[in-house]
Image (tube, rainbow, N blue to C red):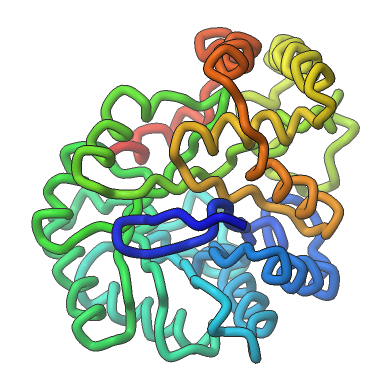
Length: 327
């Protein structure tokens, strides 16, 4: 697989999001997930994305076990800031960006990942009660100590990105970006391009919806968080959004590829590094093939027209969560 740069950090053109292997998308399968991670490395996928709050904690442990013996093939990315304990309801989750917590969280992640350094360390969400300069200052100290190689922010606003980058170079900004989540194109993407910061696109398949796999609420596994609190999957929005996916599938059929591959190829052509998540080797291989799809400007326009941003029904997170984005 081709390489791309996130700032000065070289990664594969496509990464692997590991969250769903342990949390949010129904029951996990550690053996199958480990096989998927190994196959990803075989295909040249180097960027593995996790976070301490996935599980919580269990996803980092899974990834750490899976890459033992192959650590030199991997760019390990993890995150801190969302404070979550096992069994804790979402309403009780916390948020911390204070220097003491930054260092405490990093040490815990290093242990779970079974490594002596984190390649890319993100602040998962910006803490409004702690100046970004203080948070990034503590992250920069981890770089100086050799415990972290590069720094990142997740779901940060343009002004925060500028302030953080002035303290220490930010290699990557991770944010949701797909055909049905394009709000970052107004300010965040131009800011990153101006500053030489890479963009890592999570949920590039619209949490799986753009694959065309889901046609009704009956298609989701028990405990899947999408049905529990994701507005775009709510009954009143489902039919309208399914019509958009059908338009995308029509374009995909013309190219003899899947809707997922077309959606991922569109993200690739925006210059981002997408990190689609999957537990299964089959879908990993399908997703990885999208990195090789070449599209003309006319084709890209047709793909974008199939899923107009203003036609998507529902916000990308529940109402109470939306204010935590783009701070």
